[in-house]
Amino acid sequence: GGQMAPTTLPEMKTTTSPYGRKTDDIGFPIRVCELLDSLVAPYYIERVSLLSPADILKAKKAVSKAIQYNKEGRGFTFVEFISTCPTNWGMDPI
Image 1: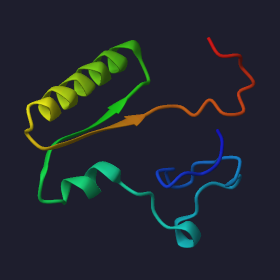
Image 2: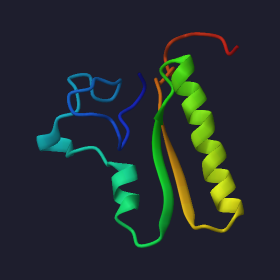
Image 3: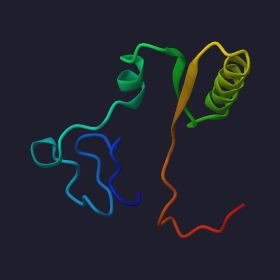
């Protein structure tokens, strides 16, 4: 993976945290969906994975829902995507 992000899990190794994310030094990851869910006005919040074709289809449905709810003026919508980080894989774009 690339550099550590605010959402990098504890002990996960990255280029900028080669020994893993240490919560005693760096703190715990930000749980974005849970943080936003604590607000007064969110209407639709979902975390989706892009690990498999089935997950990608679920993610597509989640995005469609979020856009539809937003168009209808129902309130704030947010979809968080959990995916691999292809940085430093040395692959050409498809």
